[in-house]
Image (cartoon, rainbow, N blue to C red; front, top):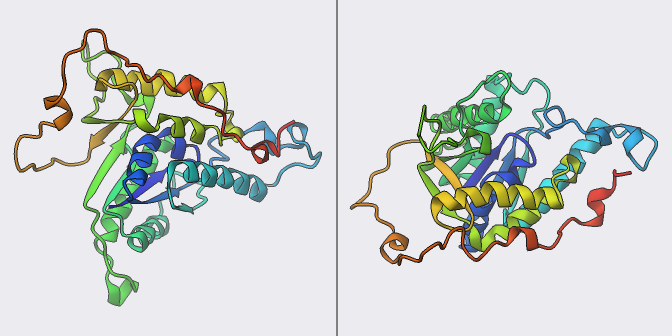
Length: 287
C-alpha cells in the first residue's frame, strides 16, 4: 500500500500514529509524511532568540523552520517514512484558502496514496490547529477526486480509505460511565515498534520532547491505550466511513487468545529502557 500521513505540526509525525506507520514500513508499504506547518507559531520556543542559542544572533524564521524540518527528517528515517513534504503554512493557518486546499490535493495526486491518516477534523476550530489540519486533509481529498486533466493538468485520484488518529486529549477517559467522549473504533498493537516511536520523539529537541519526556509520554499514553487494546502499547483510530466486510470481522488474535490471569499491561514495558537517539546536531541551538 501507499500510505500518507497529513500532520498539522512537525512533532505530530512522532506523536501521532508513528508506531502504526513503522509497522507498515516494515511490511514494505510506501510511506509519505506531509507536514502542513513548521510549528513555529503553534510551538514558539525560546531558541528562536539569541538568549537561548549558542550564537548570540537571533535565529531567523527560515533557519528555525529548516531546523525543525531536519527533526522531521530524522524522525521519519527512524519510523521508516521514505518521503517528507513541507507546506510551511505557519502564517494564517486557519485561512483554508482554495489555493492551499488545491496545493494539498496536488500532493495527494502526486503520491497517489491508497490510505491517508490524519487528525480528527472535529473540535474548537478557532484554537485547535490539529482538528483544522483534518479539515484541510478531507477537503483536499475531495478535490483530488475531481481534478480534470484537461483543466488541471493532472489525473484525479481517489483515496481508498481515510483513518483519523486520535490525540490523547480527544479520547474518552471515563469508559462511558457518564457523557461519552470520542471512543476509538479500533486499535493497532504497536508493542513491537514502540522503541522507534520513542526515538522519533527524541528528535524534537526544539519542543523539549526528547529524553525522559518521550519515555513518560509513550509509557503513560500509548501504554494506557494498550491497556484498552489488551497489549503493552497501542494507537487508537477512528473510521471515516462505514466498512464492508466479507464476513464477521473477528480478528485471528481474538480467536487465538488464551486467558492468562493478570497479563496486562504485559511483559514488554520497553519505553523507559529505550536508549537515546538524540544526535548531537539536535542540540545545535541549545545553550
